[in-house]
Length: 79
Image (cartoon, rainbow, N blue to C red; front, side):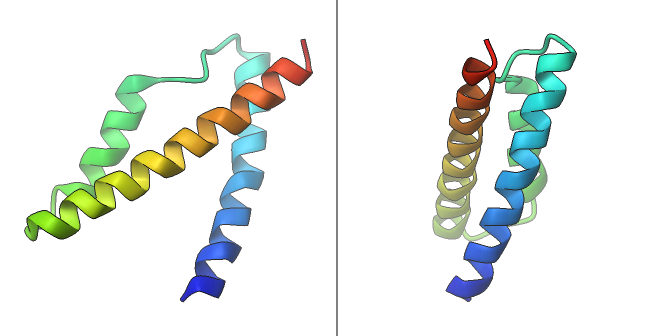
């Protein structure tokens, strides 16, 4: 499972860099809070187990934080 998670994380980061370029070209902010809330809601709404729901929420929030940080780095390197 960990091998798959690492592979998917690396794929995600490639997309994150492309999204950063898109945001640069379109003058967009890195943080789009409504989009993050939409993503959280999408994945959490079906989970009934409170503990697992909280753990998944933390996992997704951490992924989004890492993604925002990477996008900031890309954007700042092109200024």
